[in-house]
Amino acid sequence: LAALVSRRLRPDSIYTEELRRRGIPWRGSLTERLAHAVIARDILTMDPPTVAAGARVSAALEELAAPNVRVVYVRGPPLRAIDLNDAKRLWAAPDRDRLSVDQVAHPVAVVAPQDSLLDLGQKLWSADWGELPVCEEGKLLGVVTRRALLGALDAEVLHRDVLLTRVVRFDADREAQDFFELPADRHIEEIAVP
Image (cartoon, rainbow, N blue to C red; front, side, top):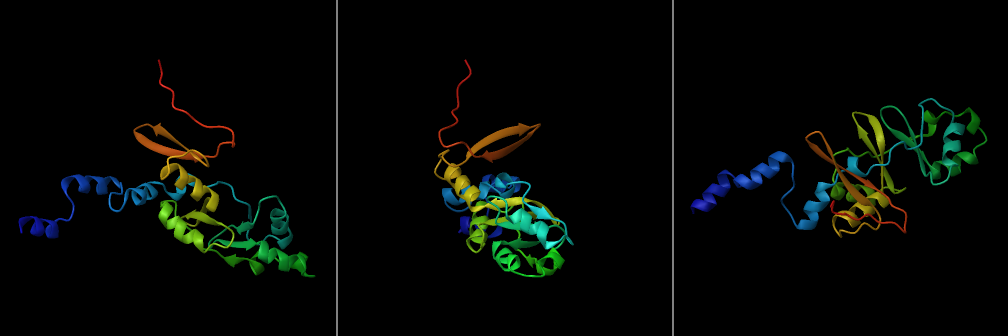
């Protein structure tokens, strides 16, 4: 009875309360906790293709013609985009040289830098082009791709460095981590210093 009343008044123990205060996830399975530990800021790809608001459609189409580009973002709040579906329609439009990106861009769903892998997985499921823009206070920081998400899950949950490698660094008193992609025939090993 005492334990039940105690849990009703204070659901966390002194240990789990400290974990919650530090922002360390502790509820759920180990897999869920690992997936909550990595956030969008850790795996985003910086400098996605963008055009200024008011630019001509031809500038966006030029960006879309580059290899591996599926979406061009139109800067400025709210964030909008022109994707390959729009480009197909615009390449055939006779008046495309007179159009501005403001006339044809559509709104896009964005994610926050602190969104976890679980949040990103749910949101990426419905993203047409396999990427989501990461925005903070209306500013585009980069994009999270399905490839980066799968690589982070591979590294964190399966503990393999096949797709991405996690590197932990220490900035003053703060620990930070980055993920980067290795070429297919390379790997990273930890070597003890003699």
